[in-house]
Amino acid sequence: MSGFARDERGGATLGGRSLAELLEEARIPTPAYFYDLDGISRATRELVTAFDDSPGLVAYAVKANTAGSVVRAVAGAGGGADVVSGGELEVALGGSMPPDRIVMSGVAKLDWELDLAISRDIRAIQLESVEEVARVAARARALGKTARVSLRINPDVEIDSHAHIATGHDEAKFGIVARDLAAAFAELERAGSALRLAGLSTHVGSMLATPAPYLESARVVCGVAKERLGAGNALEFVDFGGGFGIDYGGAPVDAPPAFVRAALALLREQGLGELALVVEPGRALVAPFGVLVAGVVQSKQSGARRWCLIDAGMNDLIRPALYAARHRIEPLERAPSAPEWQVVGPVCESADDFGLHALGPSVPARIVVRDAGAYGFTMASEYNGRALPAEVFVSRGKGAHVSASPGVQSWVKRRLEA
Image 1 (cartoon, rainbow, N blue to C red):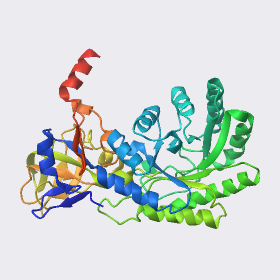
Image 2: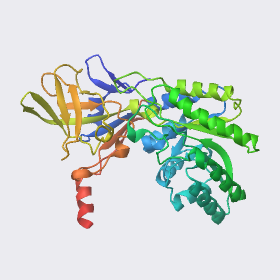
Image 3: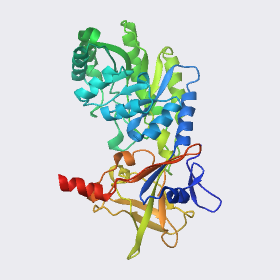
Image 4: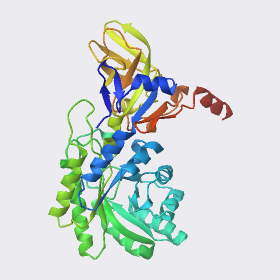
């Protein structure tokens, strides 16, 4: 499905094109992100196809990569969007996403964000607390509209993942726990025509290796769905969330279509096959199709330890510092080989450390960080007065589109004006 590979000379490629050549053509400094848009389109299409004739929606989690080029690639392949802010909603709408293929999540949605979602008639606003039911009803009344909503259920399911990406346990800030569901449904009744309950949703967490925990949380939603249908509610969909993991070079994971097929089988088993299934993949659609290219500033020998100092830091890719995540790092122009070097960035924090990687007897001029298409640029910052990296979007049919870095002087100017 393309993404990262090596050519016959050992050089790194993305989407079948040499990364070294792309960097030269773009005429940009490192660090820089590169994305294979064709690979993203194919991954989306493969997941859409997994539904066969069953009703459903692949709602791409825009937070994983907010670039308009990425959103348009997903939309063009038949995908929709899961957004968590008004800004993301505007990107989705501007990126050719039809409103009826957009759902909005988030525990603390602002009034203007709710107004935008309601006025654009998106598929559903996911309500995450009893208090939010009344808030959204009030916004809908003020606009003279009926808001389509779903209740996000906290399934109280633990997963084997980093604590920061586990969202379905009973102490998480997300969703409505079982003991509060009755109050939420009562509030929905009081809302009258201001709200229309279109579905039920959940999200158990990220980096799921198999469908097992996904199905465990889905069963909780199925139970509530059957109760509501029995009470006369006309539900349209269930949203089991995303969280499909990828292989960052460690243990293999099940492919995203396996999650969809397992979820569809569960719906049929539960007698809910007429409901549309919504899934919210983010990482699985974009991470394997993006890389971060960085320059090597210098090497450093400290006792027995070999250091490789690069120009990309935790400000460019924070996942290793935030989640203890590991990305494969390799030389750009040759295959990896022993010995290993401790790869670190320029940021003045001990957490700015990307781990040990096989870079060869001497450090290369440039390195490539693999599987960086998700939660990379979208989480980047200008910490330590460092410019945001450039982004290069690669497609065989359209060549390369460059989103340039604003540069350090942009940061300097803004801080001096503050």
